[in-house]
Length: 259
Image (cartoon, rainbow, N blue to C red; front, side, top):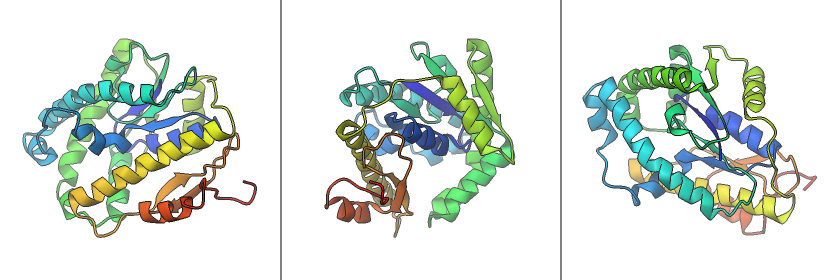
């Protein structure tokens, strides 16, 4: 595995998708396994209860759950049978103190303004009154998590990239790529198509469970990866799980004329 970790709202998911698709890497966003992991862990308290105890308590609870999930992430990646190609694992659950056996890793840490902007942008895409009600509590917890990442990275000698309120995403993406270094690639063709299909199906499962879990009337579009199998393909197709299923019923999801 190689990691892109960091506090919420730092642009990790977008950068990880870009680098994985351009570099033919298997992408493994931990958030796409959130509901799948719940069935494999001891019961956890609702987020609202942790937040009610204050930001430090909520941050500690987040880290405790993250440590439990890390074992599940390792199991999930092994099941993908990737051989010598490392999965690009991404998520706020990855902390520098957890990465002893990880060859390459980088952490993105946003400032408070960028975190707020990212969370408000997400809320604007969905009808989630509960999410809006706990925004300020989440932001306070996020600030604690960001400070923890910085401290641990300094202690363990890990790379941190600060994300300002007006980020230069091209420069940040280039810095992340440089920190991870050159990596083996998936073989173009059927293997690359198969891994992109695996990732798209994980997004469908998570989306449907999230919709049911919080009672969303409609899911926002998700950027499904092209499954053409062409090396370096970064094309995406935005849609819902149902529309993805309908489209892939014709075979691999192909999103551009060059497929």
